Image: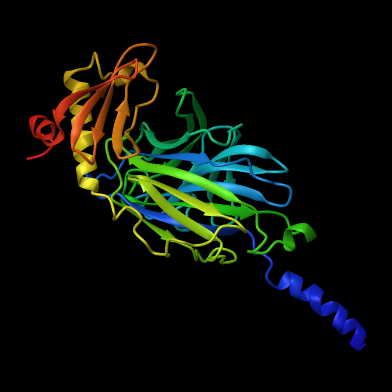
Length: 368
């Protein structure tokens, strides 16, 4: 009998630290308060870029963006992959309370009853690692009799502008709002492992779990006219096994954050850090205001209309730029945040110094 106990102890120990799935390895909590109106937002866009193709032999991977409504409930959208259903895009909205308030409109949208109730739309979608996708949530319209509203979810290839409608969900008037009201400024991005109860899956621990890296850009609201104010990282999410020593999140540019999870990843940035605190976000908003002004008064050079999707500003090596160059036409606006100079980037790659950035902000009315 003692011999059997000795043999079994290592086996028990090998599963003692097995991952409890589904598991949110870490999350980023965003607040968008600047420019918020009483009616809320009609749109959120979160840009997602997977760093590499996941190993789905033992579990599924999900990069998820969670949003909330004024009516007090929420929804989520994102990109998934597992070995059973392959790659897909998801858009879901929960019911309000115990009422059946989120209803499917598109044929690929179905009611769900696990982890709450609501409607979920799932669509096969062959996303690619290293490619940027804009996950869009947008209020479409109200019902003709005023009893509900419709919301759509899209996966958009940012490079080509190609749009893929994931689904449409109708939400009944709830909590005194038309539909669910507008979107609030509180959103979350998270990475999730999920999978079947198999021996191989159960043998995975924090120290052996696979790599999962995602770069998040946003969320941008009301067709990218509003930018977020803060993002705070969380390594203990209360969903699944906490592996707080094998995760890390970092921001290398304003309005962008990177999350990484895996056996060889180590927490460098402490939990509950405002990752954008080191940036003067108001200064970047003033630059965005300047770029919007240039689009309005100099559309021949800075033309958003030539693109299927609105161009957003980017950061690279101390430059904050918006690129309007396309098919041999247009220019880029480039702000040097170190020297505080404004440049115009030409099609051939040349840069023309337009002068003092602060003066341009004042001239455009973007800074008093």
